[in-house]
Amino acid sequence: MDWQALGLSLWLGALTVAILMPVALVAGRWLATTRMRGRAWLEAALTLPLVLPPTVIGFYLLVGMGPNAPLGQAWTALFGDSLVFSFEGILAASVLVNLPFAVQPTQRAFEAIGQDLRDAAATCGQSPWQTFWRTELPLAVPGLVTGAVLTFAHTLGEFGVVLMVGGSIPGETRTLALSIYDRAQAFDDAGAARMSALLMAISLAAVATGFLFGRRRGFRV
Image 1: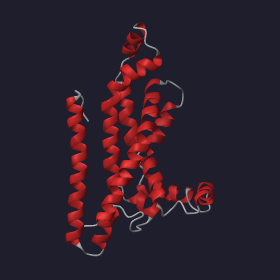
Image 2: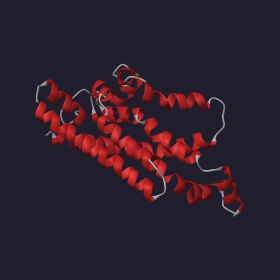
Image 3: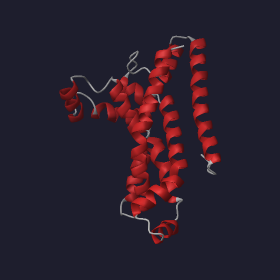
Image 4: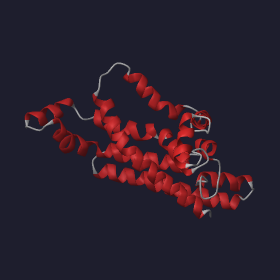
């Protein structure tokens, strides 16, 4: 069992969730309530990670964060290290790839809150900020939990983008999914099977937790 890769995967998943959930809260509510022109194009762009091959996303991220790109050069100037083939690089890639998994459930949760409920809160004397905190956010919590669960589970299983952006450096970028691939390439079927079973169990537990929370709140994941 590659415990180092497991720990790195769990840490990557936790950080990705921590970064994305505030973004999902703001973006999800804005998309649910705005009627601006071009919103469909923005939603389509956020959905791209779901439909594009990981190699395509990984290629553009590799180019965009590489040493010849402005972002890569700025990172090197600030921190002295390369952004690609680093933990920070796969974290940035994970955040971008998981945007739809975090934003879409949150958006749907806010869309399910009728405008009449917001109007009723306003007639009770609540300001828009109070309506958000006291009325909308409690109702949208199941959507946020769903987004967090899906983001965490998807981060654990992400392979192609992480491999292209970070390679498979032990203790730095080798996640459990990459370790399983390496064991399979080395014909260590028993080791790959053990780690695959563990990864599946962790993902199942995460999704089941989301289901249980949703049912207690009268919501479904």
